[in-house]
Length: 296
Ligand SMILES: [Zn+2]
Image (cartoon, rainbow, N blue to C red; front, side, top):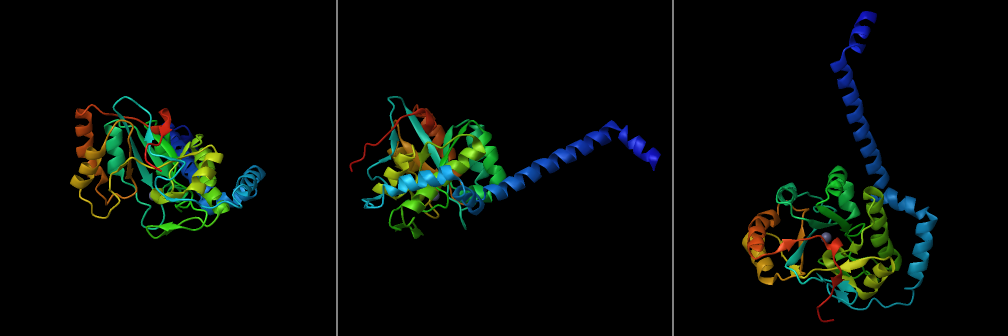
C-alpha cells in the first residue's frame, strides 16, 4: 500500500489529474453556492437586512406616497427609445425575461453574435439569472455584451398593479423599488458593473415608475424598432421586414434571447448582412446618450 501511494505521489500526470478534479469541483461548488446565495428570494432577504438598501428604499418610496401613477405605456414621459448619433449606428437589444416558459437560452443566436462580432445590450431579469446562473456569468465576461436590468421578477413597473399581456405589474412604490434596485444590485454584485439602464418587463411602465428609476440614477429604456419576434410564430421574414423598414441612425431594436423556439436567430442571419450593406454599424447603449423623440 505504501509503495502504491509513493508511486502515485510521484506520478506527475496522476497528481495533475487530482488537481484538475479539485479545481473543477471547487468551481462548481463555488458556483452552486453562489447561485443559491444570489437567488431572488435569498438575495432579497439579504438586502432587507442591509441598512444601506433599506434606508434608500425608505427615502425613495417616501417621495411617492402621494404620487399618481400617471400615464401607462411603452413611451411615457421619462422613457428613452433612441440614442443620439449622426452616424449610421444602431443598437441591438435582447431581453431575457425569466419565469416559467421564459427561462430558455438561445445559444444559436448568442453564438451568431459572437461569431459575427456584433456588440449587443442584454436586458436580463433576476429570475432568468437564477435559472441560467453559469450562462449568465459567461455572458457577463464577454466584452461584446453589455448587461443591463430587466427587473428582478419580470413585473412591469407600476405604482398600482397595472398589468400588460397578462403579466401583473408591481403594486406600489416599494415593490417597484425592489424590482429595479434589487436586480441592479444583484447584477452589480455578480458582474462588478452597475446597470445604467432599465427596461421594464413588457416595456410598459407608468410615469411614476420611470421617475423612481431616475432617482436611482437609472435610465428607463424602451425601443424605437419593434422586431416583433415575441409574437408567437412570427416568421423570420416578417421580423426582417419590421427591422429593415423602420431602421434609422440611433435606433434601439428590441428582440429576445430567451426563446430559442422563436425566429430571432433566423431573422438576424438575414438582417445583419443587409444592414451592413446599407452602411450600418452596431453598438452597445453604454457608449451613447439616450434620447426620446416620440410624442408624449
Ligand atoms: Zn421581458
